[in-house]
Every structure is written in C-alpha cells, then in structure tokens.
Length: 257
Length: 143
Image 1 (cartoon, rainbow over the protein chains, first blue to last red):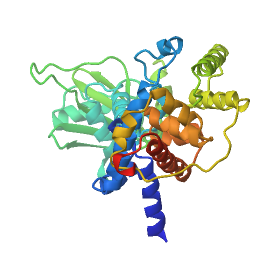
Image 2: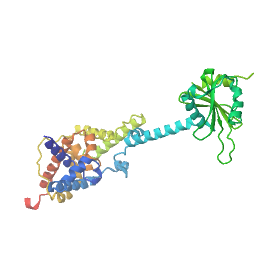
Image 3: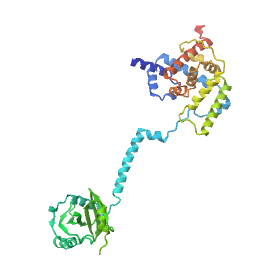
C-alpha cells in the first residue's frame, strides 16, 4: 500500500516536473526526476513542456504592463527576517555558545574586579581558616596587639603587627606556619566572634622586588568566609570571619579612641 | 489566463492599484504569493461574464516524440487562447506551469490545488494539447 502511494506521488511529481532546471530546488522532485531521467515518456514530456514554454514566452504582453516587469523577478525574493535567522538551529547553537562564553568571561571579570595584590593568598588563607581547629594553635591569652613582639622575638618576623582596629581583642591561640610557597604566615584566633587574623608577606613585583601596595581595607570571599585585608610595611593583615562583609564592617568603621 | 490582452491589462492594473492601496494602509499580507493569488481571482472574475465554453470532452492523445516540431508552428496567441479556453482550475495550472516562473509548490499555493490535482490537470492538458496539435498540424503518417 505504501509502495503504491509512493509510486503515485512520484508519478504526480513527474507530471509537475519543471521546465527549467532553476525550479529544481525541491529534493523529492529532484529524486523523482533522477529516477525517471532515462524513460522515453519522461523525455518526451520534458521536450513537449520546453517547446510549449518557449511559445508561451513569445505571447505578447501589452507594452503598458510589460514595462512594469522590465528585468525584474516575478516572485519577490523573501527577505530573511531577524526572527527567521534567530530560529535557525545553527545560529541558535552559536548564539547559546557565545552567550555561555560571554557569561563565563563576565563572571571572571566581575570576580576579579575587586582583586588586589595578595588577594589570591588571602583566599587560600580563608580556606585555612575554615579548616583550622583550636587544638592546632598554641594557647595564648593576651591582647592581639601584643603578639607582634612574640612573632619578632620567637620567629624573627618583622612588622607582623595587628592593626589598631583589632589590637584590643583577646586571643585564644596563635601559630606560625609556612604555606605551600614557603611564606611564613602568622595565624591568631581571637574570642571576638571566633574571628581569625592572618599576617603574611605582601605581594612583591616579580622584577623589581618592591612591595605592591594598596590603600585601605579590601574584602575577599571564599566558601562562606569573608576577609578584610590591609597592607602595612610589606606585611598584609587579614581579619577573617565566617559570614559576610557586614560582620566585619563595624570593626573597620569604628574610630579608634 | 484570459486570452484577451485588454482584459489582462485591466486585471493587471486593478491588482497593482489594490496592492498600492493596501501598501499605503500598511495592510500588505506577509505571505509571498498573495499578489499572484489575487490576480488569479481577478482573472476568474473577469471571465465570469464572458461566453463560457461548452463543457465538452476534448480529445486526448499521448504526447508524441515529434510534438516539438508541431508546437514550433503554433502562433503564440493561438496557444494563449487555447489555454484561456480551458476550464479553471486546469487553466490556472497550465498558465502558471508554462509561465515557468514558479516551482510546483508555488503553483499549488497560488492556484490552491493539491499535488495530485495539479498533476492530473497538467497531464490532461498535455494530452489535450497534443490532440489539438495533431488536428491542427497532422503528421505526415496520419494524413
């Protein structure tokens, strides 16, 4: 039944086979013609149609009407609209890919917008803060500001000073350790909001070796922790707390008496 | 379609006038063949008041291998009149097909036909035209 219907359709297509090759855009038509190309009946039909077509072209068109058609196509070429272009699967796929790439680019750009010298180290130290347990630190009960002397005397660390905004906080413990780049990091745990302080060498210019300074306090974020970082005398100080900027803002804004 | 150049011109101008008016109103349809469909209906309307051919069954003959030489002897206006005398929609099918400006899908769209109908009208038209050619220019063997 299906074969019969297919043959009938093919016969129908052949009866409508175009006179000139320029009307051969349709694939089923091309396929039907290629199958029947050799048959004498079809060759006769094509010759017949071409001959009639040639005579039809000789039918005189009134001059007044003919001038409207001068060298112009009878069928207006349909313009490709924006809607049609956007619905094209290839265009759609490329658009989505470009959008994703642009999204990643914007995300990276925005996330590095607030970068500052030492921000990468600060983020790593926020991860350290998240994993630190009190047992890992040496118990010290003192004011945070007084630990500078301890770091200098015991570990030879110069300018490892806690800024005055955080100098009065009572400490629970502290330690000095080396990170994966063999930089010596001082870590202090204070009782206030279970905050942790980090003191680490500021980033330096790779060519000149000069400290890359930045003014004021800068925020970094990592895994739910927030750090406020400042630089002084080639040493960065970071106050880290679990939470957001709001948890640290009161301490940074507080005028020192 | 009409076999009459004066009527054809009237229809042509009426179609263009209507299109211009619709364009000025911003009411032009978005689909591409409305103008041709409109022109076709105007042609059919224009022939309604004409003398209608009697519904007779025309002779039919298989397309002959040497039809080409017969067709070459045809006067173009005679062919135009022969096509315009065919009953519609066969007339539309033949006129649009031999105009050689549209592919079969476009003809189906303009003449509002199905593929099987277009196929039947064209096949029948060829056979009838061949019979007419045979009667008009008999082949030497047929004499």
